[in-house]
Length: 282
Figure 1 (tube, helix red, strand yellow):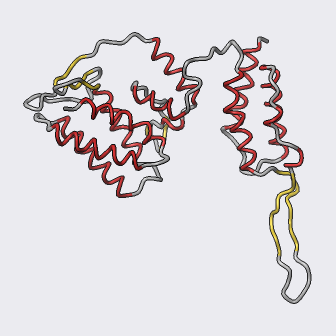
Figure 2 (spheres, rainbow, N blue to C red):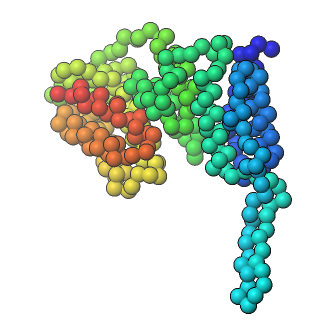
Figure 3 (cartoon, rainbow, N blue to C red):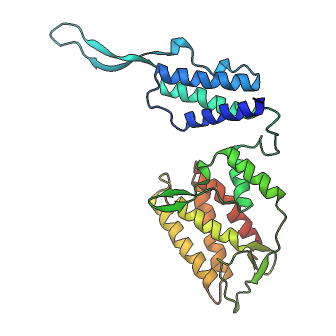
């Protein structure tokens, strides 16, 4: 079997293992992990022993502790029957291997100009180019979560985007006098006195803001402000006489919320789109 094919098989096994990590990694789980490492080593020709779990890291886990009685006597400690490894260390080894693998992939998987970018940079590029992540089903509805997409999928999507010829777009003038804008129109643009921005960017922004409302790290005040701004932006874009000042202030408010949402992958992905639209407004 060619090395690139062996690599893809081993990599698929590794990804499947990563998506189903146990809460309490036992010796059997460590053995499975080591078998995958051996397959990756065989396919790549690289020594990956530094990512293995050393034997001394495996030990019975403390299940319960009984204190010594006040009137004398000894306490006791109960241990699990199986040897286990501390979950934090187990995951740190797996994450380290995950980040190292792209640097040793066989020649059958050519390196792209996006391989050395961080996950945050890749997500920003997705937002800039209007690339939607694959939907997932939650509560019977399709939702889009860029932060959950594998970086390999994002890189492949960016490469496909580069290879796709640019399509001519229709232009819908937003002159704030008497033109009605349907921002759901595919391929349409808004022209605002100087420059222009894609209507798809606006609809993607609104979709992303609705996803941000589900972020548990965002407080209720920020979520209320986002809801108000979504309504304001949609109302202005649907209005027969849109007000550019109101639209600009809503976008500025959204930008401030995103900047304060530290640690949110969705907020980081939306920020470039907001800034781009604001830069096109007079």
